[in-house]
Every structure is written in C-alpha cells, then in structure tokens.
Amino acid sequence: MPTSGLNVSRRIRRTPYTDQVEAHGVRGFSVVNHMLLPKAYQRSLQDDYWHLREHVQLWDVSCQRQVELRGKHAARLAQWMTPRDLRRAEVGQCLYVAIVDENGGMINDPLLLKLAEDRFWFSIADSDVLLWAKGLALGAGMEVEVSEPDVSVLAVQGPKAEDLMANVFGPGIRDVKFFRFAEFEFQGTRQLIARSGYSKQGGFEIYLNDGSLGSALWDTLWKAGQPFDVAPGCPNLIERVEGGLLSYGNEMTRENNPLECAMDDYCTLDGSIDFIGRTALQSLQRDGVQRLIRGVWIDGAPCPPCATPWPVVHNGVGDRQIGQITTAIYSPRFECNIGLSMIERGFWEPGQPVTVHSADGDRRGGTVTSLPFASPG
Ligand code: THG
Image 1 (spheres, rainbow, N blue to C red):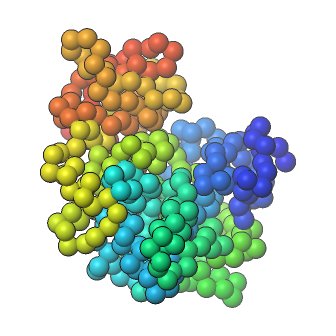
Image 2: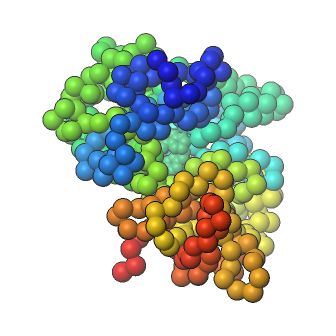
C-alpha cells in the first residue's frame, strides 16, 4: 500500500490502526513522534470539519506516545519536569502541563495522567520527552523506570461520541468526567478511557494497552458507530485553530515559554514547588513576557496553507514585524481566514490592526483577537 509518497521504514512507525486507516482511504500522513499520523481521508477538510461538529469520528492518534514514569521517584521526577503543581493531582486525573527546560523553554505540552501514586504517563506532543526524562533520571540518580509502553490512543470525537462509546463499553462511560479516566472492559482486557481529546467537540480517548487488539478495537467501534454516521478522521485544522488548541513545533518551540503560550494558570511560581526552569519562569513573570499567543483574523479570499511562518507586521511606520502566523486556515463558520501567532507586547490587544505577509507576496489586512476565536458580538 503506497502511503502518499512517504517512504515508510522502521524509523517511521506504523500504528496498531494503520491497516484500518488505509482501508478507509487515508489520503496522507504526517509524522509525529516518529509515527504515522493520518492527515486526510476522502472528504475535504471542510466536510470533515462539519462532520466532526455534528457526528462522531475515529482518530488514530497513536503518535501521542506515552512516556511512563514508574517507581519510587516517579512523582518526584514528574514534578521536577513541569511547572504545574501536582501536589493535589488525583489518581484518575488528566492534567494539561508544560514541560520546560532550564531557561523556561517549552520542551512539550503533554497531558499528564496520574495512574497511581508511583506511576504517571506524559501523553506527549511532538518531541523526544523519553530521552529528556531518561537523562534527568539518570543524572539525578533517581529510582524510576522511564519507558514508552505499548499504548496507542484511539480518539472518539464529536457530539455523538458518548452514545457510541456507551454502546461498546456500557453506560458507565457516561459517568467519566472531563479530564478524568477509568478502566473499561474490552474483549476480556482492561482498557483505560479518558474524556479528553484534541478537539472542542467532546469525546474520549482510549489508551489501548495491547497493539495486537488495534484492528479489533477499530472494527468494534466502526460497527457500533454505523447508526451515528461514524467516519474516520484526524485532528481537524479548522476546528483546532478556531478552538485555540496549540500544536507544539508549530505555535511554540523551545524558543517560547509557557507564559507566552497562555499556560500561566498551569505554572505555580510562588516558590512552593520546585521544578526545572523555575528561576527563569519567575523572572519572566516578574518582567512580563515579550509576546503572547493570539488569534488573527486575516482578510481576503481563502488563504493557502501556512507551510512556513508568515510575518505579521504593524501597520505603522516602516515594516516592523510583531509576530508570525504559524498556522492559518479558512473558517467556513466565521467565513474568514483565521490564524495563530505569537504577538509582541504592545500589539496583542484584541482589535489591533496588522498586515499579514501571507505566501506568494500576498499582503492582507488582519486583526488581532483573543482565543478561542469567537464572532464579534
Ligand atoms: N490528548 C492526549 N495527548 C495529547 C493531546 C491530546 N498529546 C499531544 C497534544 N494533544 C497535547 N496538547 C493538548 C492541547 C490542548 C488540550 C489537550 C492537549 C486540551 N485542552 C483543553 C482546552 O483547551 O479546552 C482543556 C485544557 C485544560 O483543561 O486545561 O484538551 O489531545 N492524550
């Protein structure tokens, strides 16, 4: 099966669901954490967007690999790796966290799942957190096992996700609260299921702990999903940008810190907890950050994809660059192009007019706005 020009080798890993994904007519992949991530199926991005908002989709997001910390010092290492206060985190809870380096630079923005007092999963975005964690544990002489378990996430997203999941896993699934998880039975095995996912349409993530069950899980959900108009899908660019969900490596890199990423609520900087990068983040907070993640309304006809960042320029004297669009897409709901950009201090107030130097020498007017995107009034 040709996978859209990409030469798949051992370094670019298939997932337990790739056979099904191909059988459903995937049209392209990205590579995240050295693993395939489906990017498109038969329908257009816009049709997939409307479908996601109305029905239910199965997403192969196995590339959200788990970095497991297990053992005597697991909790200590987890806290050392993130500015988010984990002291009151409960078993069964998911937490959106930043992982930062000694300068406060973003290394990743995973979900953290607390499985037990001495066992955690970082469910990671696209960077090699496993190596960072292993290096820290080794260097600090911690008694903790750092591994990437055989766990592959299948996301079930959309307003009909709960009904579909209840048909497969029983009514107990309805009691799982947002950002909580519990175990459910599947073909004689125990599987962890969370109410979470990389969309704002609601849904679940199944952390399948045995790759050999991948096809069975997909097929079971597919069959049960027929009355709900289930479709294969993937994180939808329009929906994600509208909702202000950030993508590591795109909206932010190690050059950015969590305060710029609007993750201040997830940083405890009062000195009550210790973690890598604390001093750096404390001084950044004291001085105030120099840029902040924002939305930008971009005028004109539907824009091309933003393959390389587009300069955002102040409409004043000269051509002062005050940001760069890192993701842009036409929103059919707002009937306007929308983009994400870090915007310099002094220019990030909603309503600020800007000029966007989009691809091919295009100059477009734009307006800064807060996230998530919302229609004026
Ligand atoms: N699920 C799991 N792992 C992941 C992602 C995921 N790893 C990579 C990537 N996504 C991490 N990034 C995000 C970004 C946003 C959210 C989840 C993961 C998210 N945000 C909610 C919001 O913005 O409404 C709520 C955040 C909160 O409660 O603070 O869900 O999707 N397993």
